[in-house]
Amino acid sequence: MRDKRLAEEARLDGAAASSAEEIRVTDRRRVNLDQETNDGASIEASAAAPSLKPSYVEQLEERTRAAEQKLADVQARFEQLRAALQRETDETRQRLNRAADERARREKADFIASVLPVADNLQRAIEAAESNSAFDALLEGVRGTASNFESALLTAGVEPVPAVGQPFDPELHEAVDTVEVEGERDGTVTAEYSRGYRMGDRLLRPARVQVGRAAHGGRKMIAE
Image 1 (cartoon, rainbow, N blue to C red):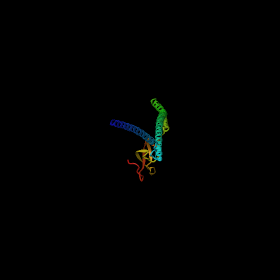
Image 2 (cartoon, rainbow, N blue to C red; image 1 turned 180 degrees about the horizontal axis):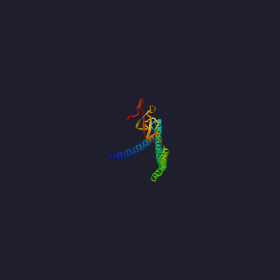
Image 3 (cartoon, rainbow, N blue to C red; image 1 turned 60 degrees about the vertical axis):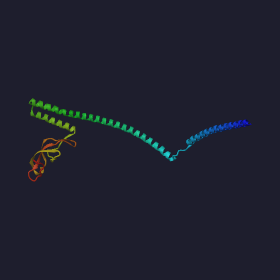
């Protein structure tokens, strides 16, 4: 009897243990399944969660990025235009320099060509003097030389400075000496020792002159 009761208790204990193990296994699977479900729901919830930024902030950021891109494009275009302008400026400067050099060479050649007759007349004057020709022929040759030289200067834009009979002008004349004159001729150029020349507004050299000074009552123009 006792043995039968022990056997029955052992059987019941085994069944209880088996049931408990089955419950534990079932609970573990359920826990894992519940965890996976919760994780998936968390991921889906996270993916579906809306941005925390307001829509106007996103629009502002988008506009900012667009403005930055536009600014970068404008800057790149500006650099291209500046480089092109620099190239055109350099080419224009070089072209103008070449044109100026060519004009200077042409004007120099024209001036030299214009004074060649002066050399011809001087050579004729020398030949006339060496052959004991008449004085009139020699004088005519010298006059022709001077006339040709003045014509060459006028062609080059060089003009003589008016002197004799003009009021003394220290900007144009260099007084070498003075001479006593009547009162109305006081301060007037009475003689020219060497001609002065100017080119436009530029004085190449002043005329070296004699200036009249009244003996009594006239104003003193220059100091002796």
